[in-house]
Amino acid sequence: MNDMVTGVVLRGMTPADLPAVHLLEQVMFPDDAWSPQMLAEELAGQPGTRHYVVAEEPGGEIVGYAGLAAAGGQADVQTIGVRADRRGAGIGAALLTALIDEASRRNAEAVFLEVRADNPPARRLYERFGFFEVGVRKRYYQPADVDAVVMCRRLERRPVGFTRGNE
Image (cartoon, rainbow, N blue to C red; front, side):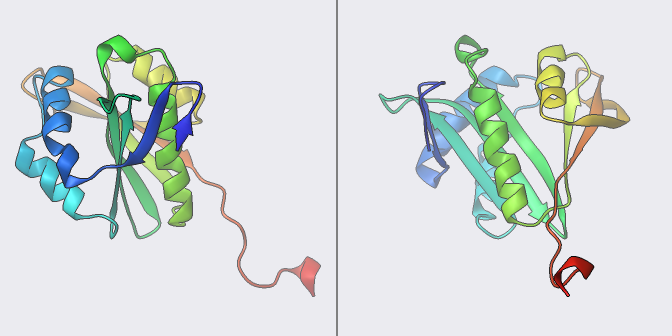
């Protein structure tokens, strides 16, 4: 998916992307970065219960990525991140849109996520997309002892089968 607003292309993450994604992971989330093995295990879940995308600049550099877990009518944003110098350009919104669209394709009834309580810009983005707070996980992010705000967005589901208006 080419996004003229952000200047990046969103595409499915592949194993070849893992070194670049892991480097970004370490820079963006230094306290609790996922290991290369964790990233590879998540990616191995595609297309079954996982969906991962990268945001790639025209020159091929990855500047963001996001992942979704979906099963049993529920979806969870596993991760979403955009390189600091590219934040504010709509890339995070494009990645989140891709995850929500995938959750809908998978017939999820809701999408959940955790966001650091000390990350107001991310919380504002999620609220703009219709997410609302449903709880707090105390001291979730370690070793920083930062709470996670649990947020949810309900998804529209079309009725299946006959309804009274169709009889």
